[in-house]
Length: 325
Image (cartoon, rainbow, N blue to C red; front, side, top):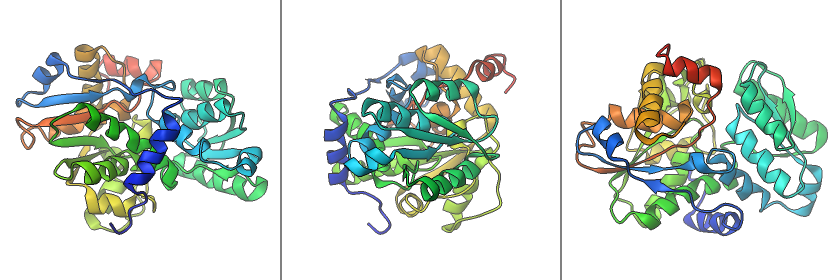
């Protein structure tokens, strides 16, 4: 597989490292959710929002920290984030006594910032958006000798994300498709790595916020498209570029790719709240929003979606519940 960042053996190794620290998350079906979506679709919901940081990124952090050498751990780690990735790195670093520096844009979600501080991270608030904060983290690597943990370009991150798909296949005897939020691509590429090894007939569909469509337009063009913004309340999807560690694999492996509007993401948050009584953030609901958009195509099939994170802040949740988004 050209351009593929990890192998299935990398996923198995990540699962062995992660399992002592993170149990398998629940996989559930909800009759009310399936009725709301319609089309006779059987929906398997993977609850990554039940991880210690309320997001799948806890897996990624442990995957990296458990693979570092003594010198890297002594020097400390740095990353950039809008929230969940930084929290996952900070939480894992605290478990192993490693200093973590997290770069994030000015005006970032204050509740996510407080969570990262609570896990012991040092926050550097600089830059207008995630991509500018990533440049700050890269600068700190050069200045301080820190070990970068890139949210998408690090194979250990992608292998960590892949482990939840391994858990899904261990429980489901039948699966036709997965609909997964893209953002930087670690979830989707991780899922496709596992499926191509164990169940290659399963189709993977990517979902991205229409207000942060650079990776979607790049996927269509099969080459990076620059100059597009990232305006979305779904923090985990607020990227305005592609990442070399995942882009080729996304181009090679995705069955299709759709975008969803802010209103469609907000409606998915509301549906999940009313039918499963689970709180999810925008990126965590994007898989459901994409499934609804793909409903006719996936009629009668068994489809897995991932509630990738539940860290929606109170102000945004109020707007969603009041149908102001």
